[in-house]
Amino acid sequence: MKKLALCLCILFAACQSNKDHTKKTAQTDLSDRSDPHSYSIPTDAVVKHLDLELAVDFSSRILTGKATWEIQNLTATDSIIFDTRQMQIEKVILDAKKDAKFSLGKKDTFLGQALNVKIEPGTKQVTIWYKTTKESAALQWLNPEQTAGKKQPFLFTQSQAILARTWVPCQDSPAIRFNYTAKVTVPREMIALMSAENPQKKNSSGVYQFRQPNPIPSYLLALAVGDIEFKSIDSRTGVYAEPVTLKRAAWEFSDMGKMVSAAESLYGPYLWNRFDVLVLPPSFPFGGMENPMLTFATPTIIAGDRSLVSVISHELAHSWSGNLTTNATWNDFWLNEGFTTYFERRIVETVYGREEAMMQEAIGFKALQASIEELGPKSEDTKLKGNFAGRDPDEGVTDIPYEKGYAFLKVMELALGRTAFDAFVTEYFQSHKFKSITTEDFVLYVQKNLFVKDPKLSDKLKMSEWLYEAGLPDNLIKPSSEKFLAIDSLLNANRDRLPINSLKSQISLANEKLYLLNVLPDSLDKKDMAQLDQAFLFTHSHNAEIQCAWYMHAIKNNYQPAVAAIEKFLINVGRRKFLIPLYKEMVKTEEGKEWARRIYKKARPNYHAVAYSTIDELLK
Image (cartoon, rainbow, N blue to C red):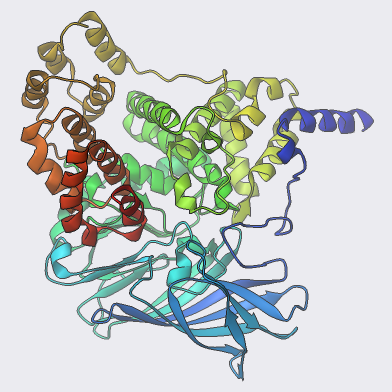
């Protein structure tokens, strides 16, 4: 026993080279988990269940709500604190009978205002009557012309990272989990859907009831209202979309059932009953959002050839890494996205083959290298354990948590062997299901479950470097793909000119085209641009990833034939991943900045706050 204790002490010290982190210890509850992005103090009083009532008014673009929270007063405190932003609090009642005193704190740009409600030691329930405002950032209200069908308006929410507080007063921290029920009243010609058990048809009343039986954090609260229909894929998967989009979406995502089965074969049972996808209008700012039971997806992944359905694999993987086992703060975001990116590529490998997964891995590594170059190899923001206190946590949505997190897990896989690593990940999800954890929790779990059995693993993994230091450690495994190596070989053998005919005969897959665009030189003459466009039809591609990569080259090289297509893309697509790099490239010249401003004037009404808040700063 003494040897074991000594071993544990040595291993713990070896893994914690960063002095700031040697002071932190893993916790099994909410103690010592201060979240810099929430006013709540869950160690004093914490929410456990939400009963939500909402009335949706498209004419005023307001939600009128009543949020009834069941709470636990853990310390007999005289107050409970909620997060709010951009909403009006009308009244608060305790235990359905007694008016409560409440106050709102000072406004903060990102955090909003603390709602401090006075309670009693025995208080079990807090009911808050409120209204959202036209500024409520989570809510995207669309006019009919901004939808695919052009007939009815549309509403959807985006709560991640800290926008749930703009449409529901809540304890808006990923460390705090609750289940919920809801009643939502909408116009009778529309249907309401939530991150919960959902209807598959409209009813005549316009009133819809919901239940989410599993405990979730607030960022997974979601609502969509519109002219939406459903099509089943199999017994537990299906697609929701506007009627004009539904057929194409169902065809594109027809492998969803296979993906769920593949995921279960890797890391255990799917615990959320159904896995359905809602295809939103183009203004949705992300590729997908893993809302439990109802993933929100961008229409930009409908390419017509299923070449972008890995996004669905990614959101499905979140059903384990993220929704099931969650980062306790947004500084621990890599725990969600690193594991999910790894899991996504394992699903892709199982369903579509090893070569497809290897191509995606190589493209992801290129993106990681570009992000580190842009941020700077010594930048604090290239660490996996982030520090976004005082900042919008959306600043952490870069390739670092996704691709650096993935790269670290690949190092773990190689060190352990795939079979042993899969067993580790399965048990990791099982041990932490419906829990929120920190990076330090993960470190301690690795120490207890891996390093004790094999102390040499500590040196192999260099875990402290990966988690707490900038840049990339030297035990990085650089991915490669035979198909991509063939493209590299052609380019290296023809350095004085682009071998376009040879490339055309070599390249057929969407990933190969995307890789080519990623490795082309920044400076291309008009002849090369025109020949590339003629050979691969880049300007009018139906693949949004290819479009964005090609439009970057078009902007850099002033390729006029793509100007109209770029403008159309920026006006009609709201996905942040594409918008930010294109606008960033445009503003590098004064002429480009004026062009960007002209487009943005038309496009901004179609963007979600998650996107336009960043672009507003760029175009000042």
